[in-house]
Image (tube, rainbow, N blue to C red; front, top):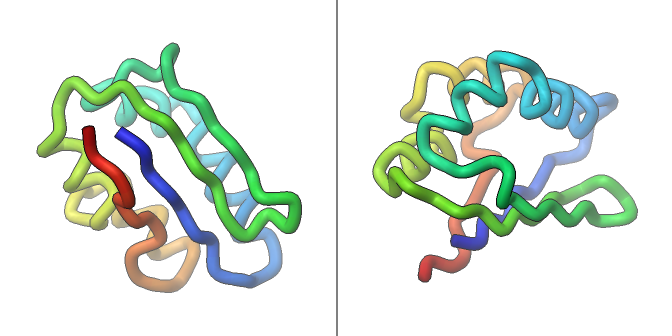
Length: 92
């Protein structure tokens, strides 16, 4: 599965997002739906977006995570102060 995450402009939003994703809480949450050892990230030079190739073992959990229906990702949305920050662009 390929996921494109677009970060809306704002001071420190990219760093907050990456910090959360790399935190113990973020890592534990991502492990619920993906094999994080097989995730491959790519970051836009201007830090306005991130693309992840993800090995997903729980597709429903992944969809809830990227749409903000997951309690943990909802908290990230509140910190970033806008709606959905991730868009599922490809599914295999």
